[in-house]
Amino acid sequence: MRTGIEGQAAEYAGTAALQITPSARTSSLPRIAVFASGSGSNFQALAEASRAGQLGGEVVLLVCDKPGARVVERGREAGVPAAVFEPKRYESRGHYERDVLRTLSRHGVQWIALAGYMRLVTPVLLEAYEGRILNIHPSLLPSFPGLHAVRQALDYGVKVTGVTVHLVDAGMDTGPIVAQEAVAIGEDDTLESLLAKIQEVEHRIYPQVVRSLLAGAHAGQRAGQEDKA
Image (cartoon, rainbow, N blue to C red):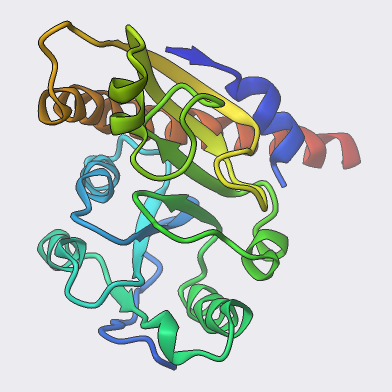
């Protein structure tokens, strides 16, 4: 896995909701919200790492923009409070995200991890969580951004694809890259088999990268406090 965690950490240490259960502060670890729209396998990987004390942070909230998505059930099984929104009920994306932001504030969320969240983040959240929103994408960015990245790689005929973890900006999968790991494409790979290989890598590296980034951010903050002392 190729990472740029240390440098990135130093640079960036910086009502329609349903099913919200208040989350008590149980530790001093950084508080993380995971955003997801689908089945939620990456959410589950992060939640399990959090529960095992291997994330360097605490997953305190699931945010979902698709009522009925499988991830909501995964959240319930993991004991993570869920806030489920219906964006189409809002006048604009900004109105939607302001409501999301209020929910994040109530839960004391400090970092956001996107995990199959099929929606561009607007300046409302980008400004509130500048340098503290991560995303995982199933390709070696900048190749194959956006939807259907695994199918794009197969259709294009490349021999290698992979997984990218990056910080989120206003573009589609254009933010600074934090870590990447390659996945070889075999001659007999199908969409299903390649997706399975990529997900295996995703579930392993996303918790690792989150832990390393949070540790670097904490070290940077501590150094800054010592400099002021």
